[in-house]
Amino acid sequence: MPAISFAAMHSLALHGPFAARVRMAWTYVARQVLDEDPATPGNPLRVSLARSVLNPTDLTAATSAGLTPVIATCETVLAAAATAASQEPAALCEAITDGHLLTAVKDAWNITAGVTPALLTSA
Image (tube, rainbow, N blue to C red; front, side, top):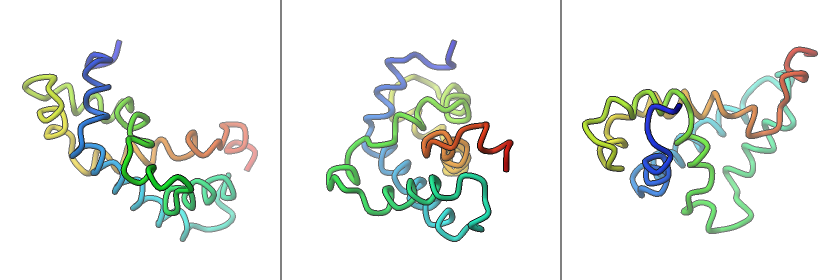
């Protein structure tokens, strides 16, 4: 079972300040991915995701929940959120540091980009 309820995860993902922080974490990591060694396993898929994060085709993607639910369900984020005094979105958001968000985005990058474990092991 997750550390917080699904209802709390959903509320967190829709919480404006959390979504804005997550959007910035995705943007920050996207810039790093664009600078990585092209020999990195899964690089074309990783770069494609980075480009879509930095230049969304749907202009609402930059301000909508977008990839926020991916991060709201990440174990790193859930463990931090579980330390909050309540399951209210603001309290959950406050318990999650920017470091937690960066770790979560980096952990989710390959799976979100479609880089399979087989591709990683064959490299």
